[in-house]
Length: 289
Image (cartoon, rainbow, N blue to C red; front, side, top):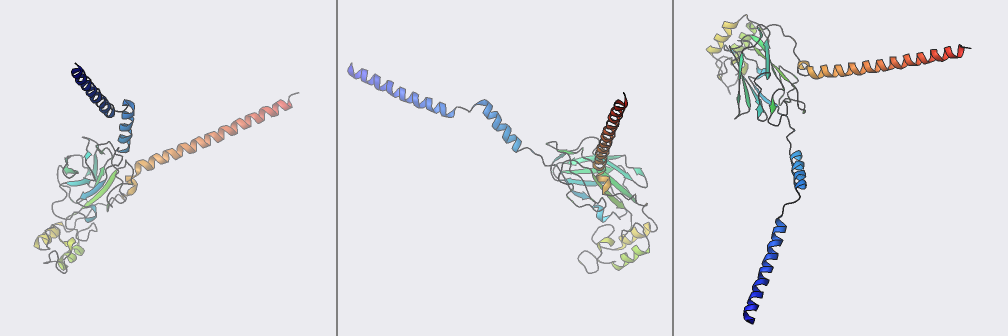
């Protein structure tokens, strides 16, 4: 009997010890207060929030290089710094000087390269093409495009001023055979072409501007492109400049300044009117017996 009781006590003691350890383990693994957990998650989310806007990092064809072949612009590729969302309307505006707005074009998005592809219904030739990529384009976090470009004809990339919001405006000059990129196809272009005739990339005397069809060599094909276009010219420029890109902000600042001035003038006029009225009342009261 004594032995059985001893065994029972030992077993009970062991169960008590195991139970205590189990309880300790459960207590150690118990999750923290729910409100504390939510606060911690919220703080981490806030710290990790994406506040960096997308920017334009490439434009093809490059506005600085012009398009001088016999095909013109069949598509424009705009590369972004991250994945972006292109809205079905309002992402791109465009116009040309000879033919007015390029209203018929398609857009597609290459998610592998973060590239917006703009495709006019027909190639744009012998004209000045202006494109506006708007800040209706956002990244996945909703940050609008940081798109400002200082010089539309020779943009420095990436775009933007470091703050979300801002349109990108750029200008592509397109003129077949314009070797020297002066907006007119004439004998001066023929001279530059002749001086580089027969030369290819890497050879002394090769002029990349004379390679009109961009095949790496200046040859009879380039001469033919030039001769067919001789006498053509671009329309006079509309003097597009960086002001177009920052028009909205300039306008908003102007409105803000105007309102501030109007309020200031109103307050001054009102104060003066009140002062004059009080002075008149005091004067009348003093003169009244």
